Length: 160
Figure 1 (cartoon, rainbow, N blue to C red):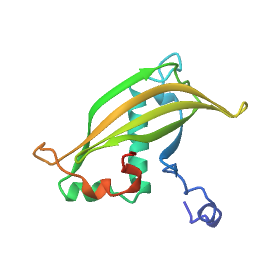
Figure 2 (figure 1 turned 90 degrees about the vertical axis):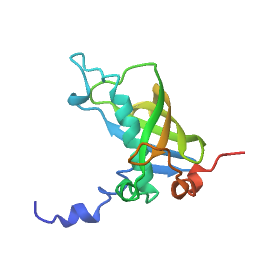
Figure 3 (figure 1 turned 120 degrees about the horizontal axis):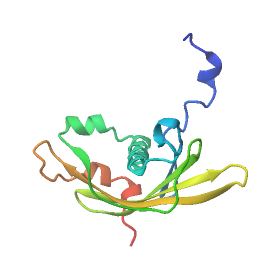
């Protein structure tokens, strides 16, 4: 592809990682054919992928590079996931993933994450899935590791 000046000067490449507003992160995605089963309903396990994408995008917005963490022998892994499914997403839906801190400790971060269906015609949001996801920091020997660098960010400060 030739360098398309109109593309690069537009906002097409901005906000791919979502937005942080206050103490919440918002990430948008579309549901494609590959996300669904024969009935055009999203596979239940895909919501874990969507939540992961949202958390990874949140870290990118905070300038926390997971490849840099890897070089420091630090890996962020899912320790626990509690998921409640209310309604399915369908082919061509637009989802909004909302992520916020539930609490943070020395070596773990627990998120509340919610998937909403956005209805453009009604300008409304419909709750589909909610989850509580605990992320732990470990090293390559699977030992728990402190994550002071990440927890210094104001997004991860526990509210009192």
